[in-house]
Image (cartoon, rainbow, N blue to C red; front, top):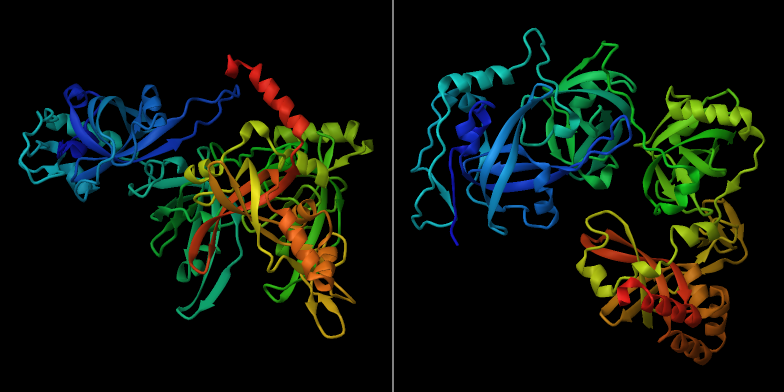
Amino acid sequence: MVHQLTSGSCRLLQNATPDDVDVFESKHTLQFLSIKKVGGTPTASGATPPDRYRIIMSDGIHYMQAMLATQLNSMVQDNLLGKNTIVTIEKLTCNYVQEKRLVIVLALRVLEQTADKIGDPSPIEPAEMRAAHSPAINQNQTASTSAAPVPAPTPPSPAKPAQASSALRQQAPTKGDRHGNIYPIEGLSPYQNNWTIKARVVQKSEIKTWSNPRGEGKLFNVTLMDDSGEIRGTGFNLVVDDLYPKLEEGKVYYISKARVNLAKKKFSNVNNDYELSFERNTEVEECHEVTNVPTIKYNFVPLNALEELNKDAICDVIGVIKEASPVTEITSSKLQRQIPKRDLTLVDKSGFSVRMTLWGKQAEQYNVTEPSPIIAFKGVKVGDFGGRSLSMFSGSTMQVNPEIDECFALRGWYDNAGADQTFKAHSISSGASSAYGFKREDIRSLDEVKQAGYGMPEKPEMFSARATIMHIKSDNLSYPACPTPNCNKKVVEMGSGWKCEKCDKTFDAPEHRYIMSLAVADYSGQAWLQGFNDVGMTIFGMSANQLLEIRDRDISEYNVIMHKANSNTYNFSCRAKQDTYNETTRIRYGISRIIPLNYKEEAMAMRDLLYSSWAR
């Protein structure tokens, strides 16, 4: 079915004032180019407001930004509204929030859900907005999905010149305020121009350089935060010389004339779909105000709850530094150089302790001399070494004894009772039983995992499955590993022995560890799973050294063992993650835990299911 957009509607709506009732109650046929969920900020009482959806809508000639009324949220959640959906908007309104003009869609009717993009819409230029004193809609200028003539819908009434001028006056910056309207970071998008943000630099990277066949250059990045959210900003080459000395960690700045791009999630852990690219004309001015300045916001996770987070998850933590090791150095086989490292031991009121690793300059510049300081860490990565561990990286920040309620409460607890308390360390068993534990109620079929796009685009996801081994790749079944406890790095044969570059030691023989690739199947389909030493130990019931010794001694016995390993069913806890190799992108399914079937336990679970409300 062919639908015709109401050309000129976006320019009309962009310049209408809240008093233009005829404009907002007229019908406009438009296309939604994008819909983005905007999370609510918790109130002082701790309540979280309902989600909001920001939309980019087009009349085929221009596009503009608007918000969806909360009563229409269900249309997005039920997939009635999506990208390129064509709708007839039956009622709108216009509000001013913090001097920012906001158009809100109150009622609409869906005409077509999966249409192609119509026309080549562009943003409304300021000159066109000033020309809005005569915004009559040209009925002959239409954007349609077909060349076939279609009767144009009744155009909305044009706004009066005085009303359009009133809208422009309300959109203009406050008189005497040379920074104009301050936009919230959360409200930035590529579809806006002439914005200024007031943000605090919460993290500033070192200057990084690169060199490749296409040339060489340098870059730096910062993380900016205000009361609405955070965003990453990056500068390249000549911009580095100009802005790197100006931007200081912890200070607040007015920033404008930067380009807003889609965020490259592969290089950033900042919670924003967009990022800023600083350019030669980007303006940065320090804010010297002492009131109404943005503060760093944390979302702290108690140390005992780290077991519930996936490996490589990013989180914020706060704790008392129980111990701080001196700086040591490890040899990076990838970078071929020494990297400074320092380990801290954190504790908190949950009764748990965890190791936090600092790297590079973060390790070298740590100079806290007071006993048992309290440090708040933002954006640290969760690891599974020793059960659970944490590490800082280039995007992480830490604040010593911050003046926040959590710090004061932690100090009072530690000084009164915590200093003499015994803390529980995260162990491999506790980590496996919780974060990577098999959950029967969350079992997914292999086909369901693929169809649902687990692990896409770049967010690792956990799932549980029950499947039968169909085939095990016998080539490259193991690798020679360092015998040092908790090292497990690959060792290289050097003639006189096997050398570990990490430990800088040579051994007479390696300790082989499994590296498994197996095809499994269930009733819905097949998938390839990857696992490591614990998976091989469970499947074969022996170490990799023992299996290789059997292979070298009697190949027939080895083949029997490999054959018997097939056709066995296990419960799997898996992690789906997108991976790129040789310019080919695919989803890899890694085994976090493998559990042999306990038939008594499975029978009891089925019995409980028959007595549940599901079976009634």
